[in-house]
Length: 196
Ligand SMILES: [Zn+2]
Image (cartoon, rainbow, N blue to C red; front, side, top):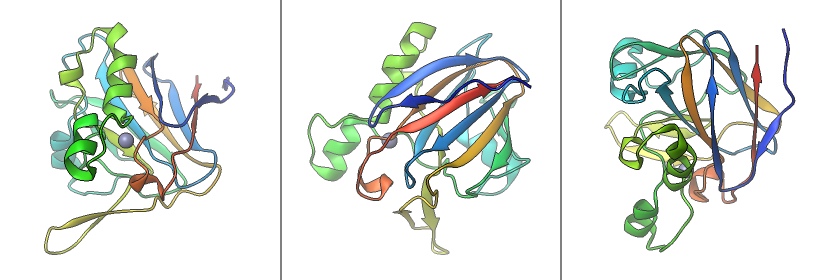
């Protein structure tokens, strides 16, 4: 198996790339307590994309880990979690957006995962309106029995990793999340690599 070196996504930025069926994407938290938003589209037709609702339907749980599969809006299997050194990720919340920072935090012009994903995915023919649900790697969202949710600091420590195997050819958008609140007070980089 060939393993490429780690590529760094600097704090509050994002990137996009393709992943062929059978390749594994490793995402590493180099400093600890940092979220990476993962957007997934089918390469054959980017109108097909990750669906949080379908994924919840088929997995019947809020917290996904090794052996669990991320599904598309057409109920196809996109990625399977193969390695998970943290065990806490979120897929309820949409990527943070410029508008979200205005509405919830009264912060204008704040960097956001939605803007970073939209900019990176644009060259693949993906419109910003199609950047919606994502698998938020290392994001720690606590769900109470009464249905309320709370964003907690990520449980990831420096060097912790998740590995996801592509089950079909996909276009990936990946960020180092821009929200201070989500990342234990400070925004940090994220590393990734593709393994054949
Ligand atoms: Zn974010």
